[in-house]
Length: 306
Image (cartoon, rainbow, N blue to C red):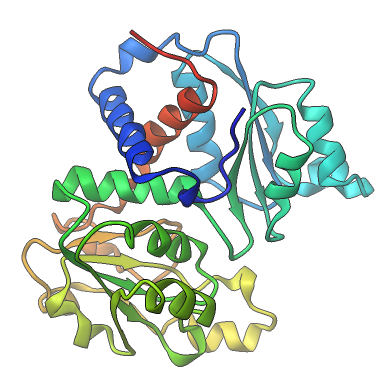
């Protein structure tokens, strides 16, 4: 039995196999329509989510399986004080695999230590988000045709953005990737990512404040929202939330083939006028997430489809 807490839980070769499987699912969905008949996925979401929770549920339903779970801590026994360890022991009696999102870093890891079914970390605080990272990798590989030799700009909340932290850790394993870290000083990448991941691995990176200064050199732009739920006070959030807004005027500075990703939800950091630009692929990215999660479920349940 295997759990997924971090994108680094898989080797590069294993990631390639998952992405290959996801691509085959995308091309041949009917081939996988009954692969998980009789199997159940539990979605344990202790904080709000639209894309991650529903894409996990869509993934299992597309595989012919069933879904059970809860969408907030208030609708579970956590509201009565039940521990994560006890919850997963109970869920292990009801389901074959579990996806857990929790505001506390490390909670899915605790669950995995007490679980008799595979546990997938669906996001824990500002820490990790491995299935979003796999989604990002599939999006880049599918749209760019490669996972190496490009410059990627990471823009917005780099301090609390778990999607950014996970993506950096995953991409440093591929050759000739340059990172441009675009953020205000208050939301800079944490030292433990900058020093322990980028510097220690001799990775190319630069830090800039102005998005306009970075755009001309980018092959990919990964936008993120400023996350209100990670701030301790409203005043700091209000001051930061409009720091970056991508619009058509700024896009005129970018390469014609630069592509824009966003883990979503967006608030106002990408103007709706950008949606029609062929470089905007964030809604495609959300669709790729379903295929990736289907591939991951099959892999963890060791289901082979001929």
